[in-house]
Image (tube, rainbow, N blue to C red; front, top):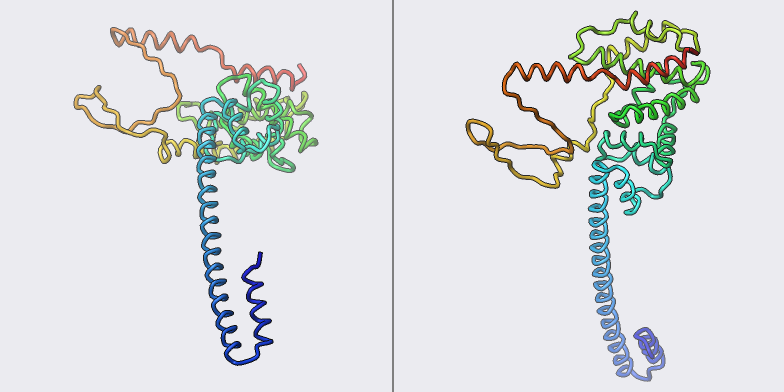
Amino acid sequence: MATMVDTVSDLIGEAAFADDEEELEWVRSEIASTSSIIQKYEEELQQIVQQLDAWNQEDEELRKQSSNSKVKDAKSTFNDKPKKGIDMLIECGEIEEKTPEAVAQYLNTASGLNKASVGDYLGENDEFNLKVLEAFAHLYDFNGQDFDEALRAYLSGFRLPGESQKIDRMMEAFAKRYHDCNPQQFANSDTAYVLAFATIMLNTSLHNPNIKDKMSLDMFIGMNRGIDNGGSLDADLLTRIYESIRDKEFDLHDTNDGFVETFVDAEKSGWMLKEGAPVHMHMMVAVGHHSSYKMQTTSEEEMNDWIVKLTAAMTKNPLMTLYRDKLRKAKGS
């Protein structure tokens, strides 16, 4: 089948052998007409290509919107059910592969994740989770870093969970990593573990407004006496840690942007009518995944009696139990 280009070539050939001016003029006219048709086809083809590009861009935008929606749903699920959320993040491709290293890297860098949920996931006593925790700790290079600054950086990546065994595993991971990076500083990783717990307790003592009797430097040095395989740590090291924590509190609260996104990118929004006030009023509320328990008494005296009994029942501090167990091991007793 002859093409427009072939037609033009033939016309040019005829022009070369034209016998008279009239025939030559006819050839020139045909060439001009054919060229005009070719130009029109080129313009139409360009419009078609542009339209195809526009459709492709629209398809890509739709794919991105669908992907973003899946990622958002997966993150929301993670903040409520961490294990299920991780599976969803892997399934939608947000986490490239189900390896401890890939999951740890994502937990350490992704936005929109609740730090309390990150802590819960890292502290799970599951084979894969334990490997993720190890990989998470290895993301931190503690070589030559001051102990308190290393601990501060580590704790900034999550919120300590409420379960004592989870805390134990997470602090073990930190202590081992810090000792591996600084093998000459302590006799073993148990020392780093005990000192980390002591530092967290110091932070709570100095910065919790409900604690009236603040821990002194002498008390901090005393509680860490003999923890280095029976030996004591350098007083200058403990003094430096004490002053650092005194001057700058550890951020142990859930301050990541996942909480802020509850307000700026809420799944549900609206008004709640508060009927418990003398005058009904509209109020903004934030609904979290929490449980609350209310007790009703017939008198203030009975209420105070319950408070005394409940306070007396809270006799075991799981953190202190872990600390004492590890302290005995660190002292070699």
